[in-house]
Image (cartoon, rainbow over all chains, first blue to last red; front, side, top):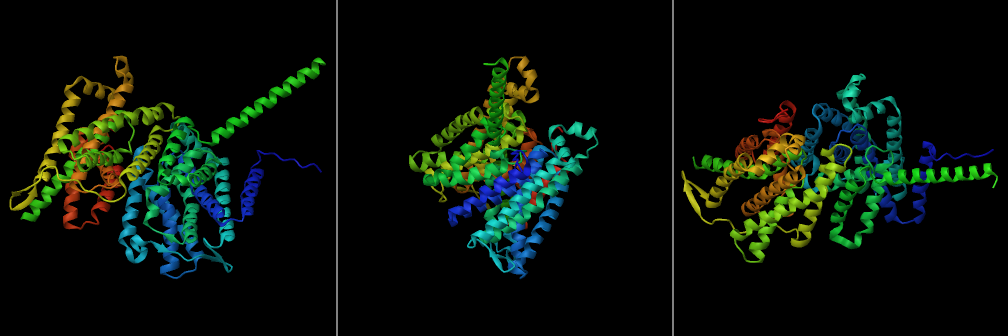
Length: 334
Length: 289
């Protein structure tokens, strides 16, 4: 039996990514594993965000509130009310979904900059609620979350392998979700709304309902990611609603490539590891972050992933021309 | 009685500062149709330039204020030529979101530079005019009176510039119709750069006033930026008249809700008003839909 590997097959691509990720465990370094887990969480959130911002073309910044809401709900349920953490995670998904339904239903009535500003206001309102209901959220101190327990296995910062596997499943779930959506009829509706809303409406697509679907589909996994992030790092607080997490998530999406399947994945890995690489520069790191973001926006409008696609097409071209030359040589008999 | 006078004075001061902070932003939106998120950091930079000249070089406000404004002008020029301009021409997808991300990155860089040079500790500069005066039994500082007068003054200056000077007319022409302005020989790129620079000047001025009235920190620009965005939306994006009226409305709502409901709920009330305005009247008071 001959084994055929088609690199353009989605399953093979997933397999390659999984093998590469699990090979990093061979470093046997808890720090590297921690970074990979962070990358996977950021990329999962960025991929979900990409459904709305990249595929549907609706730029918003409500993904961070969904993420933090997931963390807070799970934290409140497990710390203040004493439920097991698995219920907190399920509740995080449900709450993020309802939250996105409400915010989407309100904010998708407007477009462009107005939508961006509404989601900005949502973020700030959430921040003031977090700071006001101190008996639930602990205000400025944030909530200290216990580890997740599944079948007696504790998942937090100090148990690297179970956390790695949990984060890996979250990332794979997001990747498969994005792939399934972008291949389906619904995904085509999203893309058509991005490319030409008027034409999409003329083909019978309800823009409001379709955008709302995208919003809701992108939120629930983000909620779970937020809950995992909280339990994994052991803390969630108002600082998670600040600009720095937002910029990290936004940058990993934009840097990798808006509206591409693997863009956010590449972006988050590049971002987190460059950040570590520039650690000797200490205070100058945000500047480098900003410069990187600006230069990517200006020089590579389609993101870092466009380098790969360019390389691929060049490789194909070279290969084909060589084949043609060989063919002509063989035909001419020299 | 004197408490109500104080609330009213405070309302005027806040409105005036919001007006100065948001006039530049509204001008930039009206002409370029992009939102400059680094506006808040331009305020921070204005304040820190004034601090540098006054506290470290031993100058006074007569030197500090003009130099803050001039440096802001050149920073705005650089911002347009290196970031907003290329993004306007290069980006294939939506320009608004790209400029949002780009200017957000600029604000990260500027905040980082301030943090490196001056450190994160809160700082203060001396008041612009010392002394107090007595108005209806309430003690009002002279600086507050100056701030109350500066808002309308800036508005008047901007209105005069836009309606009476040749350059202002060019700015309005480009804002109305880019192609039409190009036909009569206006270089729209120059006008864009000039508009961003003027907006940055106003941001620098607002920064100096904020720094003199409150305190200085690398994050001081973010709260005024958010308020400026509210003012911008309420007034109608890109309308100078709408902006000045909206800044007085928002300033008084802010001052009175701080007085009667409490300091904490002033911001959430503004956010809710903001969302309601966007939903039910996105064109604002004066804007065109």
